[in-house]
Image (cartoon, rainbow, N blue to C red; front, top):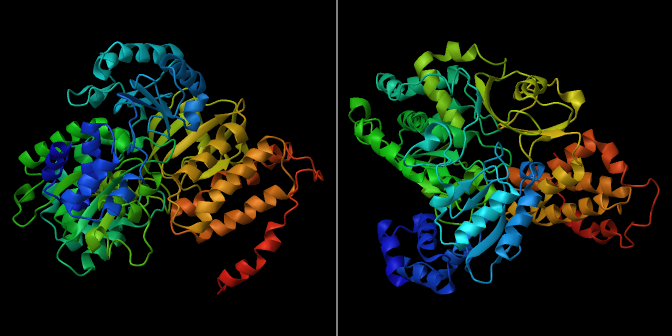
Length: 598
C-alpha cells in the first residue's frame, strides 16, 4: 500500500493541491480509500489528516470501503427512468445477488446508484469500472454480470460496440454515440486548428479583448456574463501569475453537449483557452472535467501533446516569443456543486467543492488566490470563431441580446435525442419539431435548476431575454406522472448534491422532498403548497446558484401545473395538517436573523 501511495504522490511532485488526482489514482490502484490509506497520504504530503478526510468524504466516486472488484454505477436520472431504468436495475440485482448500495457476497460485483452521467441521449447507461455502457436492457444487464463473474474484462464485455466519430479512436474505444442532429454555424462548423492563434499573435491583448467585447460573446454556462468583460477584469487585476479554467463539469442532469464537443473538437476548446491566456496574460490553463468522462483521459492528453508538438501550446505559441501557455487536466470525483466556478476552484485545489463567499470574485482571487478566468466549454469555442470570422459575422446570428448560437442537449420523450446547435431565438416548439417530439406535456428547460414549462409557453424563445438556458431540454410526454417521475427525482437530486454549507439549502432541500413525497402519496394539506413557495424565497439566501435554484423544479411546476398538485390535495381536508405550528415556534429566531430590506 505505502509503495503505491508514494509512487502516486511522486507522480504529482508531492503537490497537495493535486489531492483530487492523487486520491483518484490511489483508489484506481487499491480499489478504495481505507483509513490507513488516508493516514498514509496525509503523512506523505505532510498535511493534516483532516484535510484528506474532508476531501475523500465529499465526492460521490471516492469509496471508503470496498465496492466490489467490478463496480457498477447505474444512472438514476429522469431520462433513465423514462427508458426503463427500473427493469434494468432489477436485472442487475437479480444477477448479482445483491441490492443497489451493496456488494455481492463474493465481493465480485458492487451495485450503486449515481446521478446523471452525461448520457441522457442513450439511456439507461452505466459506468462499470470507468467504462461507459449505454442503451442497457435487462437482458444486457444479466449478460454483463454473467461475463464479469466468468472473469471477462470490462473491455472484453464492451467488445466492438464502438460509437461514431472519435468515440472509435484507439485511445477512446467507447460505445458512446455523439448523436449530432444539427450542426450550426459556430461550434460544429468547419475548423482548422491553430488558424485563430496565428491571427491572435498579430494583435495586442487589448485588441483581442476588444474583439470579443464587440462580438457580445456571453458565457454559455447559463448566467450569460459578458466574456470580454471577464477577461478585461482579469487582465487588469494585479499580479504576474494568472490562470484560465475551462469548466467541463457539466453535472446538470440532461446535459451532455460538452461531452460531444470534447470528443470531436478538443483542439477547438484548447485553442480557445490559449487565446484567453494571451488576452489575460496567463501562462497556465486547467481543464476541469467531470469524472464520468474519465474514459476520454488518454485521448485528451494525447491531443495536448499533439498541440504542443505543433506549437499551439507550450512555449512560443505560433512562433510568438513570450506567448507561453499550457493546459493540464483535472478530473472531478462526482459533485454537481463543482459546476459553480468558485466550488470548482476549491476542488481543483484539492478541497471540498464548497462555494466561496464573493466578493472577491475569481477574476480577482481565484485559483491559489491568483486572478482566474473560468469559462464554459462552449464559450471558448465561440471565441475562436470570433477571431476567425469577426464580430460583425457573429452578431448577425441570434437575437438583439443573445448573439451567436447555442448548443442544446435534447433528451427525453422525443424521436431524435441528441445535440442541436441552433441560433439563439428559436422557440421551444421549433426544437420539439426538430427532435420529433409529439404529445408533449412539459419541457424542462435548463436542467433541474431551470424551468418546467407547459405547452402554452412552447412559443417562447431560447434567449437570455426570454428562456435562458445552459443547454439542456428534457421533453416530458403526457404519459408521464410529472410529479412522481420528474419533480421528485429532481428534488432527491438536489438534496443529495447540496454541499451542506448553507443552512437553507442543507435543511430545505430535505424538508421539501418530504413534503413533496407526502403530496404525491395523497397525504398533502392545502397549506403545503404555500409552505413550499415560502421556502423557495428563503433559498435565495444561499451562497451559490445550486442552493438558490434547488427548489425550482417544485416552484415552476406549482406555477405551471398547479392542478396536478391540487388533484392530490383535497381542498379543505385538514387530516394531514401538522398539530405543531412550526412558524410560531421559530418566529423569534426569524426575527433575530432577518435581513433588513433596502
